[in-house]
Amino acid sequence: MGKQETKKWEGETRVEIQKVRTKQVWPLISDFCSLHKWFPHVKTCYLLHGVPGQPGLIRYCGSTESPSEDTQWVTEKLLKMDTTKMCFSYEIVDNNAGFKTYVSTIRLESIDGPDGTSGCRIVWSFVARAVPALFEA
Image (cartoon, rainbow, N blue to C red; front, side, top):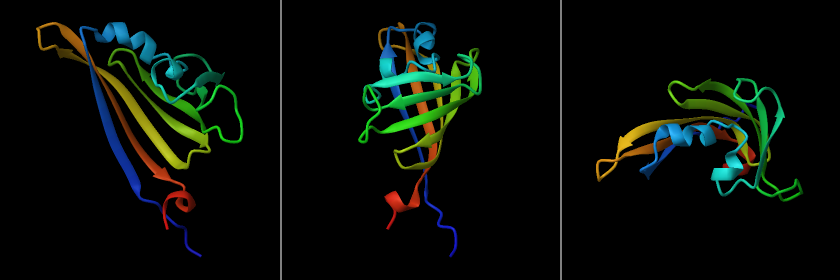
């Protein structure tokens, strides 16, 4: 029997924050284990092993405060952290959310606000493949 391949999903989302500079947002966003502090669907996020801010760090993220049968969870590995360009990339290494592969990049960009003040844009892009049995007939 041949290997079943899933379709590749690619996407990007952007959010703009007025009157807040990238250098104010970067400390929160770049803390790889702080996702639960700014992304509402993640209820817990913590370091499993590795050095904060260094590639190779592994984090756990879950949809509830404590693991249970109905908790959606992922473990993710930090691939790259660029403090100069204010971006980082990571991949899912294990999960029960249906991803076969998932690689994402988050980056910050400076913007000019409508009233001439500076702002910040968060750009979150990803490339993923689902587990075939879960998402394809």
